[in-house]
Length: 572
Ligand SMILES: Cc1cc2nc3c(=O)[nH]c(=O)nc-3n(C[C@H](O)[C@H](O)[C@H](O)COP(=O)(O)OP(=O)(O)OC[C@H]3O[C@@H](n4cnc5c(N)ncnc54)[C@H](O)[C@@H]3O)c2cc1C
Image (cartoon, rainbow, N blue to C red):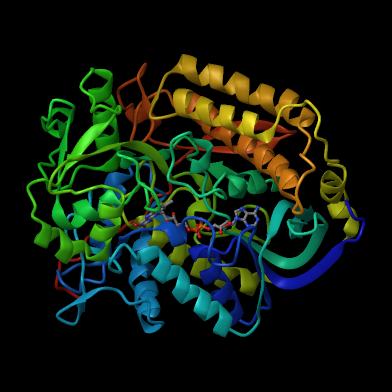
């Protein structure tokens, strides 16, 4: 490893360039800050945002009268009493501003009769979700923001730079240490404020909809810097992830938009509808919430009524080709290339880990408890409580990104930097000497972690399974990780990166497992088979932080806010 080290300086450092990070960079720059926007992948092309397929929930009321207070009521209802209501209200109130601004920037929201088209999605009382045809919402959002970032003065972009540690000095965040993935060097960055927008954690689970860089780094970085995490037990499982037949080059959650537009019948292995048995109504209209649908599929499989590959059938056989083509145009040809004809045969679906409701605890300015440290996007916890409404995640990324960037820019005062504050983190990178010996490899350990999380900290949990998972995760942290050496092969520092990926993944997995063990009830996405009922006494959030290198968990009251649903058609 080379000794050469690069040092950069900026007013606002934005870590992660998905929807939240890019919006934060734009907002910080237009509030007068110099911004460094970095990503371990390519700017605007890594993470979840570019993968998102369809809906963005927002009360623009273009086709059906709506108001943000109605969106808020639906969000709180889905969150099962645990939403941070201040954050949820901000999400719903400022969502329309962001969507209109994105419209001015030519995102190309699909229109009908001159109005943004809005579709129904589970948990929403009215059609509220805007989108870009055909399955292009995420790519269109990412492209719009990439273009805007490029046109905004004061933003410097750096790809292939992976933050391994936030630097804290005199109780204030001072910047970060990062690994340059091209050359393997440690890079230090001094900053007046930092926005952490490094996305979610679903890659920790064996079956997931994640890209490779969604391994929980936001949470681990915040935790190590001294910030608190909230609601870590609430991982959302997307009920109808693709299972069979084999699907190449298409997204595993692509059936969601199909159901928004066309309905579709969810059937067990005996070809019977079953969602009503679990207290929800669906019958082709797709209104049952995600947590209930995931649970129902899991239970049907457990009862021996699975489809051949261990999930449920999703059938569009009652639709003809013309209807399918008018709704999904070229997507039908891509399905045909995969040998799938929806008019002839159902596909099979099953739950997959998809989104994280928990995350970094922030106030309404997106500030953490560490002065100078802000967070945005899926990295932030609380707004969605125990279960997220479809379409709220992109809105959250855009709204919280804008706020985090704006408030971070306003908070920049001094840019005090002392290399001593970063020495340990620089050493962590430099001391990782590559070795092709016989120690455990990243693939072995990460694969095992994914199995542990899926089997013991997944959709249906028990106290015993969680205890076992916690013990193994802690063993991996304390015994296996220190013995894992980066593999030396290849021109890039991928082996070194993998070591830091695993460190972050284990730290984050520990927080989820501990919080799940301590929530001794079932609620929303957290389902305990040994404790199937919701306990009203536990209508509080759980906050976890590091104290003397050990996790400490405390219950905190839910942040409430006063609001009244405005009569539809009335003014705010
Ligand atoms: C397949 C899929 C489909 C989805 N569809 C929808 C939908 O239709 N509607 C909806 O509302 N939501 C949807 N979601 C959820 C939504 O897309 C995400 O919650 C949202 O885009 C998150 O945005 P973000 O900016 O917080 O994170 P991301 O877009 O994930 O960006 C995070 C960035 O941080 C970078 N990063 C990570 N670690 C580091 C590090 N250590 N150093 C530097 N950079 C780092 C990553 O490379 C990545 O580019 C979907 C998610 C997936 C996975």
